Image (tube, rainbow over all chains, first blue to last red; front, top):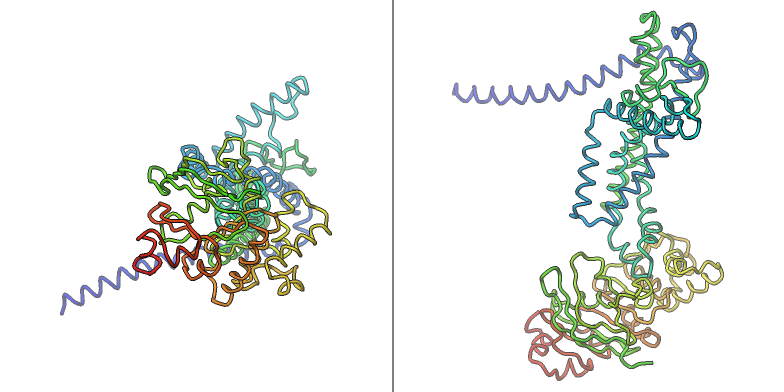
Amino acid sequence: MINNFRKNFKGAAIEGVTLFSALLIIAIVFVMFIVIFIGGKSQLSWEFLTSFPTEGMTKGGIFPAIYGTALLVIIMSIAAVPFGTITAIYLTEYAKENSIIAKTIRFAVRTLAVIPSIIYGLFGLGFFIKFVGTHVDNALYGGTLHWGQPNLLWASLTMALLTLPVVIVSVEEALKTVPQELRAASLALGATKWQTIYKVVLPGSVSGIMTGTILAVSRGAGEVAPILFTGAAYYLATLPGLGDQFMVLGYHIYVLTTQSANVDQTLPIQFGTTCVLLMLTFVLNMSAVILRYRIRKKKNN
Amino acid sequence: MSENKIHTENMFLYYSEKMALNNISITIPEKKVTAFIGPSGCGKSTFLRSLNRMNDLIDGVKIEGKVMIDGVNIYDKNIDVVNLRKKVGMVFQKSNPFAKSIYENIAYGPKINGVNDKSHLDEIVETALKNAAIWEEVKDRLGDSALGLSGGQQQRLCIARTLAVNPEIVLMDEPASALDPLSTAKIEELIVQLKEKYTIVIVTHNMQQAARISDNTAFFYLGELIEHDKTKKIFTNPDKKQTEDYITGRFG
């Protein structure tokens, strides 16, 4: 009798502990959102989103950071999406499943995905700025500094490297949902392999490519480490071009919280900026989830 | 034109090390329906797919011997597989229309072959659909998705798609096995009509079907061609005991 009670108690206790840790996750997300939203909501206004910081960044808006983030993810996508898609096409359409080269590429992709983002930053600094940039300057500008310094282009390309695995994996997944029979049908009609890929396989995986792009953008929009050394700026009075440094949401939060002359005064702006960044990544991720759900549904039909 | 459209001599096919076709020598006449019958795994589909080199898509397939079409060995090094497949079309077991409109499904083949003129394409599409006996059913909704058609219609659409590239030979891999009796009857009727213009080679599990529609029948068993003759002869008075056992349902 007592033994039984103990057993039951133990069972219930274990279930309780597991349930508690699971609920804790919900609580953490909930609290995070509530705190950030309550703190930031008074800041959120058209004015905040569209004006420059003023008075030593203790007042005003965050427009240059939004602008910089947008440019960053656009240039990053222009680099990462075609490159990633082409790689995924090679892996699914050309490489033999178990060939050494396919295995090596997949291993490299997985490795890229787990490299800490700060290392991407260092790589970008060493490769794009010090190596490529300096050589471009020596060749085109007789050694005067133009491209051998942090700027939007190098930061975007560094970010593209970081997001490449996300694109490759999503596109690969999408290409695999196109049935083999359709490839066979196309080839049997006398289409070449490339015509088959271009006219049958790619149109059938557009939503997967979109998903990959969105996931990459949402990852890129939130990362700070890769752009620390490659282009992010503390404050700029003008909007950047390709060869300029730029402001960006994630780094702006860091700047406001640690580098500001008066951290307490910037608190509402910190909350507001965080709120904007969070909503941006949240919306992007949600749309990726919805797209992916649609692809799965299509696959199961 | 030659009476022997397709001709193989001492042809062997291996999947990696495993022999799947053992010394196949056969002559298939032009503008006739030739049926391949035999139990599952006997090699009849594998043989069919080697006639337009669809087996090239599978890793580790090796072919020895001669596979001649119009007197040319299609496994010669200088053969362009893309051109071969335009000449030797294929209809698959499971209907596989593209996720495009009915019109675009048919126009796909001609377009990749460089036909871009709209009125010419319209003409090709109409002729192909008429030849596949589906024009009346779809002529008012050519812009609709092909995926909205019934299974039997989809399969006739796939036949029309194959005809649109103007092949000389049409290979059919159990084209009616997934269809209801009514749709099957339509496909069979169509096949008999098509032999006026095309050389048809059809793989089928259904012996009655082979008896109904084919002029010649080849019986495959365990990767070997056991017997090949007029369909009437195969079904009434076969030379080989194995053929007779299969025809009468003693195995398979």
